[in-house]
Image (cartoon, rainbow, N blue to C red; front, side, top):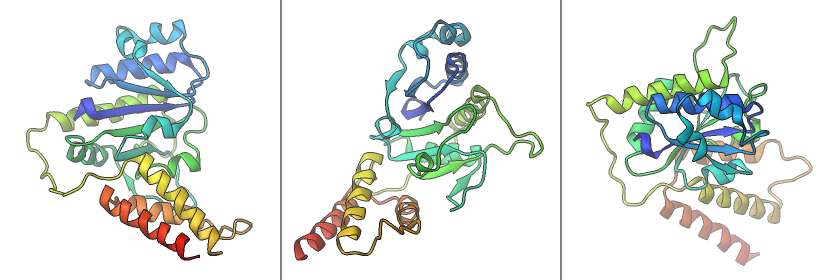
Length: 238
């Protein structure tokens, strides 16, 4: 479970926070760290704050976009500290860990953390199947990035040690990855524009709501192929 769970930090501004997050990961048995366009990295401060988790810092994979970091993941959970205009499926850390435990035996999963000051953007959160929110004190809910990583990592550790395994759902095809979902969304938008269903001058959050719908339903790769085939057939009939 832990070896198939990826921690993704987006646009981290302070290199010390990367080191502290790596330390939080290592204490709980996590090892795969992705950094999306960090502002200062590599940096000596990251190794200093890692306090022995140098291996995780040195092996961190640096990418330019969130899509690159999650492209092969079938379950992506984004951390969110506030409510959004269009609500998304929301889970607590313990429930998020349980869902990852159920899925990580056969697929790659990821938990995404945002910027220190502003968190994840709406567009980034719309790349995620679920949002996780740490139930902090509502009067002072600001968590340091590494503290948030530690809370989530702890719940993952506890779930991994729980001997009562969750029932594994048998399925004939694997779930679609984030990359496959993104290609589908691009195809869907293209077709809706072609048939004049989606007006780009007045989109009315249509794509956002469709993203939420399909990410919530979690289509498998065969279902995704059917949907893509349907869209292609619509284009051929035009």
